[in-house]
Length: 516
Ligand code: F0G
Image (cartoon, rainbow, N blue to C red; front, side):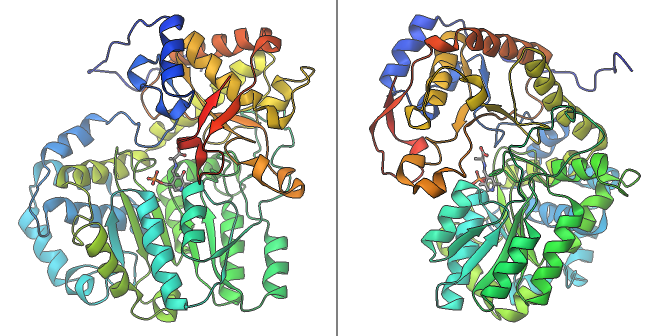
């Protein structure tokens, strides 16, 4: 339909400040032109990250009120265990679950059934098995799950091995490196190839896929070198592009043949499932719940940041299949992880999360797999992309879970080299003149200047607009499109940027100082 009926209404709103370009200019100077350090309250639209920035749906807010802050085995612990079983293994039972979460109607019955008949072999142990063979770990956020996974695994293996991935998010790669792993990225070729007519089309090339051919060749050439295949769904490293079910299945087959575990970095699992449903042959008639279950049936374990598709503001989880290949191959790893979890984050029933945040994330997991929600979420991003293209601005197309401007195209004819960091200059002007924040994901963020000429050629020149979930309407998108268009029209005048401090720091985009 030309005018689809609205799906949400906002009952709590926040007024945005009136700030002048002159004022923002002063603040930019004060924060050394680091966009991460710019005060959010002085912005009109903030596309820095979709992580932890979601508006809570009313049901999550209601669940939050039912948070239980007991030190041992709070109510949220049981709710999140059950949410993981429902969403990742047996199909969401949203109505039943929300009724339980919100009213506590069946609390006693629920406790008794869970404690006395623990769920086995899946991603979430219960009852005494969670004590004997723990396989589900609550953590403050995704990167803590990565730290726990890689540090424990590395200590168990006892020598340096390689992890193969379709793309490591920056903290994921950094955590694996710090733990002593080598990283090997095989992304399907063609990430930046344009698909100009496929924006919301009938096809999606699933540009986030693992390159299975290259992976197989690497595994053949280095038989005992690889200790894990890690698939990020969606692939944040590759411009938030989705991964097809065929690719998950293919990666699982390769991993199984080599007797190595397949893990998912599942931060945006629901968005990925939506892309599969819309664009992959054979999935059009499946529900999101069925697709999620199938995706996870191929995995030996996963890490997840609940700040994305947990529809929560905080939280992370690490989980692996009880009695599965990972658990058998690294016997006792669950107990070793539990020790580390307790030492660094807190005991197993909260792992650094408050009881109320556990409740909100439990409710969020049931909402995020909702068909209508996902449809709105992804079509909002796609229409953002379409509006930019209609204004002559080139994006990585078709978009995945975020919009990425193609900055080589943006500055075409302006004689800018990658080491001029013109894309950073663009983000600074966008903050100053319009109060809109986005982040460069290119030569500056990926430290092209510190890499070999060969590595440099693999770094695309992009600026990411990550859209917070349920926060913005067409009004915000239209304002942003108009701002980008105005800057595009005067692109020759946009200053480059230069690093003044912290060039060699790890993940320098968070803390380096810059200057236009
Ligand atoms: N994995 C992926 C694919 C991510 O995108 C992120 C975070 C993490 C792991 C780490 O999770 O932030 O909860 O510790 N991505 C955010 C982003 C920060 O803006 O893309 P976390």
